Structures are given as structure tokens and as C-alpha cells.
Length: 548
Image (cartoon, rainbow, N blue to C red; front, side, top):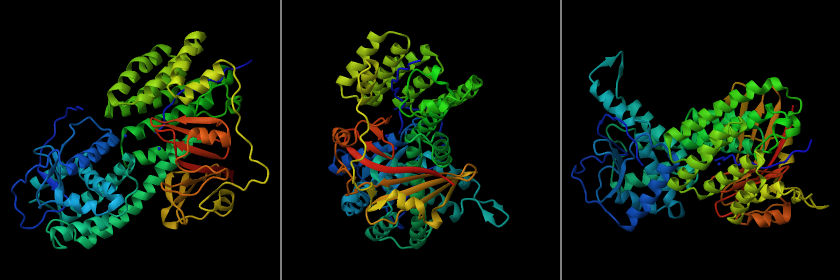
């Protein structure tokens, strides 16, 4: 039997109004300057400083993607008393002008420094630290043994958690991994003329020590998230699911729920027989590997797919305008052969959310999915029209599907030319590293009961080496990833900022692609390329798997 391979757009991620009853308990300033005036300073509206900071604030809010509660208003004020803070009584977050000026001193990292402060305050809000502080304050006269509620230890925990989760928020919003929180605090204390010891706060030295440890922990969490995305892109869906779950236990956002659902959908594909799947999915396992799966697996795959739909629903509950989750939910229903719901979520929900949330790519991918539904139901002409229109708007997935629908030849992945050097990142070939993989002993992470994660960052150029070990199966998965700012090139001369066409000219069309809301991941046999919204290369990785 001949099968038509048509790529289905399942979106993977690598970011207003809400109603809730909140109990108000005052403020949580980043640092309260002793003896400062309690008078409110003037608002700096429409100033260049305010406009720039507001843009950063909005990116952080969108990256968090939690609109179950009202979003605090943002203000910049000319005052010198608290650096930055959240006020529950007024439902506002304030950044002081002097604090902004301190952040500007970080030059190219100034936006990351501002994001560090604002992400810190937003985390106080989302994690309800003000409510916890206020609740404890109402019972502060009670002692439980030798312990007092609202202790300095509680304050240190709140500040450390705000640095940790706020840093991950800033990373997910695109401001990079900022590890200079301790230096930011030192400059702020100096600029504000604050003593190192402020009542109600850990000492500056203690805050810096906590900040250093928090930055190390944050770096590890970012690596776990990147590893989850890499595992998903290369078809290791069961492992990816566990990595996303690990992140979700510490940080909840629409993207994490969405990606957890994507990993579940793709994991479910192994429980289909080839005669049940005419269509090939962009993040699928090889259809040939599922030939041994029996019809009795139908209940298993249905359970996994319905669990994935619950993950997509969780993402939508955080942000009703989050269009990728609607497309993914439609894909899950398509796999369940529920075309009525698949059409509804693709044509109505996904497209409307794409318009509300400004996701132009998602609107095109919804049309691609509708084209696939048309093709699966035998309406080839309608499918051709949908694919062609999306392809004319620059959608690579639609262009590929159109060729498959028309039985046109596809550009194969190019073999390496004879004598070409091996692919290297930061001067190292992955095969050399995987034979005796180095790792940082303090960075081993137990992702699950049988899954360990190892990391290494000791390269001259910005690059990372990750690998996971499944202690039950003996499977090892290695990934060597360029970091932002990497200056090297691939063995065939491709570097950051080059176009998809440049990559195809050297490597051919990839065997698989992973759609993202911003762009696409091009997956080849031993390497992958991550494209941004402009179709330009942002990162790439070499990968390999072994078994002990």
C-alpha cells in the first residue's frame, strides 16, 4: 500500500484581562532604603526610559502567559526609596528612575539587567509572596516553638525564589541567561547609599552569595528546558516528556504546558500502525518503527492523546489568546479521527487567537492543518489551494506538503563530501566528547527516577554539551549546542544569521522539521538548525545516541 506523507503542524516552543479575588497586603520592595521619604514621587510617563522599560515589562508578562489574574500596571517614578517593588494595594509594579540608570550602566546587558529587576517583582506577584508575607504578619505575635512566622529566613526564601524564577522568566522572554544579579545589587546599594545591612533583609553579602548560587541553579534549569526541546526535535519523546515535567514542577507557564502536550502527542504516534497513518507528522517517530505495534494499542494511544489535550487546555487556561495550543489541540483531535473538533479548533479558535495574540505564523499553520484534513477526506483540490496559499506567504511546511500532495520530488539531504572534516562546535567533534563525556559534577540532575541529566560548559566559545542517561534502558543521548553569540561555522560554512535557503543549498531539505511559533527547527541525521522569525539561523546542534 502506498502512503501519502503530509506534514502536520504541531507547534513546539525553545512569549488582557483576568478576574480574580486577591487579598491585599501591602508591598514587597526589592530593598527599602532606611530613612527614605514615604512620599510618592512623580510618574515619568512617555519618557524614553519609561517607554523602554514598559516594552521589557510587556515582554515578561507575555512570556509568563498567565492571564488568570489582572496584570499589574507598570510605572516608573522619580524617587529613591525602594529600587523596585510591587504594591498589592494599588496593583502596580514600580521601577525607580535611579534603578533604571544603574541598569543602563551594564551596556549591552542593560535590558537583561532591567528584566532581572522586573522579572523579580513579577515573580513576587505570580507566586503570591506579598499575600504570604501579609498572612504571616497578621500572626507575627505567635511563636511556634522557637520559630516565628515572617522570619528573616522567610524573607530570604522569597527573594531567592524571585531571583530564580524571575531569571527563568527573563530567559524565556528572550533576554538571555543573566548571571550578574549580585553585581546589580552591589551597584544599587552603592548608588542609593544604602548600608549593607538593612532591617528585614539579608545582608548584601548574603544576598550576593544567594544570588550566585541561584544563578547556577537557574543555568541548570535553562539547560533542562533546552534539553527537553532538543529531545523533542530529534524524536526522543518519552524522555522529553519527563524533562518538561521536571521544569513544570518548578515553573508553570503556557509554553511548558504546551510543550508537554506536544511531547505526549508525538509519543502517542508509536502506537499507530502504518495503515492507520496516511500522514507523516513533523515531529514523528519513523512510521516503520511502529510496524510491530498491534491494534490493541489503540486504547494506549487514545489515553496519551487525551492527556495531551489536557496539557493544551492548561496552557489555554493561562492565556486564552495563546494560539499555538489551539493548533496543537486540533492536531490531537485529528489523530483521534475527530475531524469535527479538529476543524473547529483550527478554523475558529486557532485563527481567532492568532489574530488576537498577533501570531501570523499560527494562522498559516492552521490553514496547513485544514489542508491536511481536506486531503485525508479526499478533497485534494481544496487541500492544494490551502497549501498553495500558505506557501505563497512563505510557509515552508505548506510548501513541503504541497510537493508531497502533488507527488513532486523532494530535495534529499545531501551526503557529506568526501574528505570533509567532521562537524565541530567550539573546536570539538561530538564523537570525541561522547566517548568520554566530560561534565560538571555539581550539575548532575535527577530528572526522573530512571533519568539523569549531565551538563558541561567548559568551551572556549559559547557552547554547551548535554547528555541524558536512562539507567533502565542504558540509552545515552548527546547534544552539542551553540550558545547565543557563537562565532564559528559548520563544516560546510554555515554560521549564525544565515538563511534557510543557505542551509538547504549546503545540506539539502531536512528529513524532519519542527514548527515553532517563531520559526522552524530543521532536523537532519546528526545535526539540527534553529531558525527565528526572520528565517535566519539562531543556533544549531550536533546530536548522537548510544546504548550502554
